[in-house]
Image (cartoon, rainbow, N blue to C red; front, top):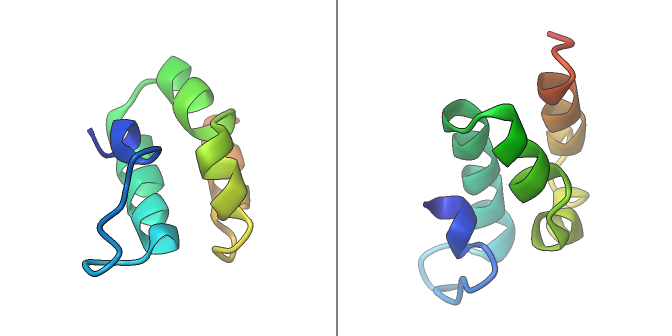
Length: 69
């Protein structure tokens, strides 16, 4: 549910957009299957615009998706 709200998140007084994307990505990785992870996290333009600002999140997502634990 968090992943579907990434594009329309506007509640910046609760948390900033970067922090929201971080939580959405981590929760999405734990709850979604591989197809959804690839479509809504790895190839999402909203996530890709912010993922570089969070240290090691891009590497974490890609290694999790590629099963490189």
